[in-house]
Amino acid sequence: MPHTFVIFGASGDLTSRKLIPALYSLFAKGRLADGTRVVGVSRSEFSYDAWREQLEQTTRTYVGTEFEESSWRDFASRIYYQTGDIQQANDFESLAAMLDELEGGQRCTRLYYLSTSPRLYHVAVEALGSSGLADESNGERRIVVEKPFGTDLETAESLNRTLHGVFDERQVYRIDHYLGKETVQNLLVLRFANSIFEPLWNRNYIDNVQITVAEEVVVGSRAGYYETSGILRDMFQNHLLQLMMITAMEAPARFSADLVRDEKVKVLQAVRPLTGAAFAQDTIRGQYKGYLDEPGVDSKSQTATFASLKLHVDNWRWQGVPFYLRSGKAMSCRTTQIVIQFRQPPHMLFADGARRSPDANRLVIQVQPNEGIQLHFHTKVPDAGMKLRLTDLDFNFQEEFHSALPDSYQRLLLDALNGDASLFARSDEVELAWSIIDPIVAAWQSPAAPVLEIYPSGMWGPECLIQWMRVQGREWFDVCPVLD
Ligand code: BG6
Image (cartoon, rainbow, N blue to C red; front, top):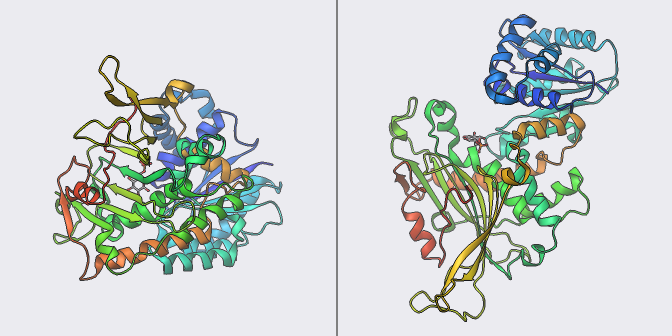
């Protein structure tokens, strides 16, 4: 069945940077259903040709060497544009008429993509309902909602209520682009398609888990958004908690959207709520030096650009295993990694004097860049008595498969078109994630907030982080890149 992909907020950056390049690449690979068309909607005036020309330039840039003239022309002939204002009910009537005409009365799956300012989500959803655009008598209707999904639990609940007033949960796709990353999906494969890791994947063998999303970029021109969001809302409520869920979840009975999401939700339900002294003991907040000079930032801003949280998952598998989550802007390098830090052997046969315990085994999942996996284990240094060294086994996607990994939007858009919601967040998942993050946000805004640590750019966050770990008898794994 053909698909109609309708983008609201089409003149925005996301459309040209991510959505159109992903749809074009899918088209060029022959992955889109025959007859699939794309319709952009926004307030700017564009003729079809003008919009297609503009998209050609940007798609060329973002797709790079894989851009191919003739397939673009073919794809571009399926791109349409409709001027429309989300706040004008009449414009939805015109859109409905335009879509009916394009589809020629054929049964068709429609996907509405909300890429507008989040403050327009409610009104857009309600207008889709009242204009009959959500009606499924002539094919399925789905809606994709970009992040941020609310700014706290209350606003997320309210948005879910609005969505459920028009769409069933099965029609709603809440996007988190981290779930579209090949390496994140591969974590499911690593854990559940191999038998060697599962017996070790628990409190008996794992000492701690470190999930790091470090970025070199600074906030720059995004201060308007970032000042109200900060690192907890921008990165933890979604990406970091998603990575944690995939790392900690149980194997679902089948790989189906609801069963996968049931298991992920159970992880969030088991996260021990932070209370009282834990906010000061188990969280670190930081701000990079120079943040206050960014355009649009209040000169006294307390917004955190770095955070580290120590969370516990209260279930049988993870009891006593801390999950350290950290993320920051202006850090020393760009890396997203999940480190499974195994325990020391119970008896150290080869302890070498002063350093009684050499590093223990570690599994490093390098989510990006240089995507791959590295396993660290001890080896005897040849011809040096019983001297040991930590060595590694590497797996690198690029070397193994000789092709660049597709952008996460390709996988997610295709899944949404095909009706597979496994890699999208469910309403309860998003709400639970907020219920973990909200109390930390509140504690950080209270008089008892932990000190805002100022860190110089180009570091692994505030200096106190090292000591914080050390007093817990642990160390961060701060190597970047782990794979070349
Ligand atoms: C976005 C955040 O969701 O993710 C940005 O709003 C952040 O602040 C980005 O830079 C990171 O995504 P990626 O895929 O580059 O790691």
